[in-house]
Image (cartoon, rainbow, N blue to C red; front, side, top):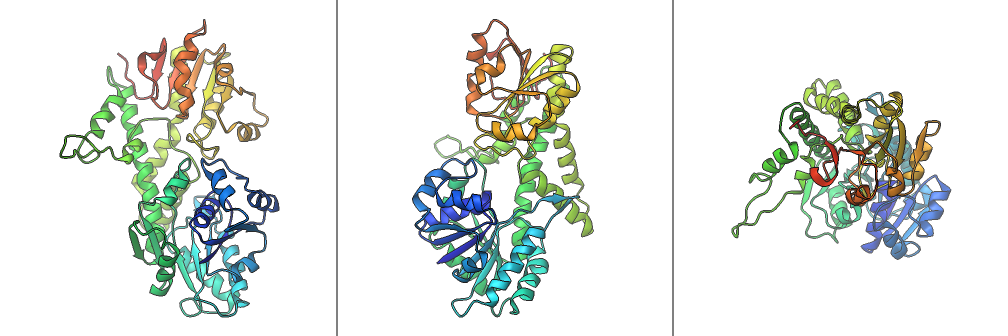
Length: 450
């Protein structure tokens, strides 16, 4: 099968490289000529473990990148739309999706014969977008009818940054939305090399809502854990890490096998108190769902509380630092972790930046460090008085406090590094990744006073 993918961002490029590695002929399309050049040279323009290796196997063979959308669509059986849907005033901005649909439709007008071409929305869009925005744009530009001359479907992605290759290659589910059975059958052929993955065959709007509901659930679990953590902080002698350990061991989350061992559900990682969620998906998707629900006459009060809790959470780390130091004015504070999660360089909605801004506003002298996201962080912090340290040891030198924002494995070395210094900083653990007694001065999120 021949596949074209409009957009070589995170979703588009990972999808293209993985499908090419499965033996499909893939053309990735982007208006950015430099990004196209990088992909054709097997150079990943984003940080994602394993992507460089995958591109080296596929670029120039089954995978090609191009700026010529029309030619790529005419040569393909399936075209995926994987462009950005940024948030604007609580709503997703559909201009890139609509433009892609229009260009695909224009290419379909000139396409002669061949199998039933299917356009697939891979971008995350609110329910109704494919039927009410994408299909009209395709029909207007092509002069053809959806469901008669071409198919239109929705195939949401469930990729976790930092483990996206594994998520794609061993999916826990494949959602196949379509306006007709013929469309869904084409999508079945697309994923024929994934025989063990459960299929969910449904219509377009339901497929769109499955994606939003999945992300909203994860965000809700995180804010729930953080609210419990904030309660623990307000009490005496309560540790939210131990509370959640007790919760995780329920049979609902960690079922016991016949031999007595337990299966720990991966979702328990979202039931841990921390300094809030970030990234390109959860904050944007929850906000978009709130607006979409409100406009549909369904008030989303729970999800609004999820966002409110998340927005307030980063300041909890600043509160802990201030309480431990007495004041932040002229204090040297190191922020460890700038990407919103480990194993990525994605800075979008990272809690590190509101933390840095608040520290600076209270007069702190801020140093920041991240294992992979330093270049992007420097650009984002342009004009702010933040020092960037390339190495962990350098970052904590002379620090009065060290604030852990991202759970990078490299930060496990902190107790050893700190022990070698004469000055023992206060460690504010925003991810509860270090043992409480591993450093001389410790303050953890969700840890009540003894």
